[in-house]
Length: 101
Image 1: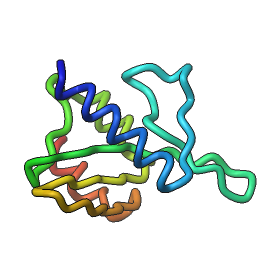
Image 2 (image 1 turned 30 degrees about the vertical axis):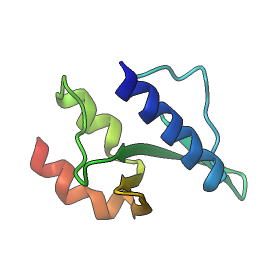
Image 3 (image 1 turned 120 degrees about the vertical axis):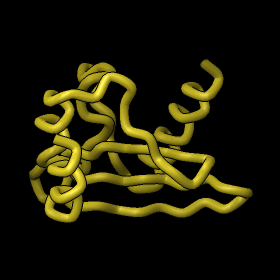
């Protein structure tokens, strides 16, 4: 459980850094964050890792593919005292998401 708390803290730090907002009505299965930009609300999937690789979900299934298709991805790497981020647009992530189906 301590790992989840740390991930939650890192995700919150990412929201602040990139000026993303969290919709608390979404819950665990919803959108991790939104970017409010020019009157549009852009959905983001946030992932963090301290190991250099990223895991997605334990109970992966078709609903996850549907959930991820139109999301932007922001991945925070917190490895050996370094902190860096990678971004993936829906079109950049499409081949990876398709490979999971």
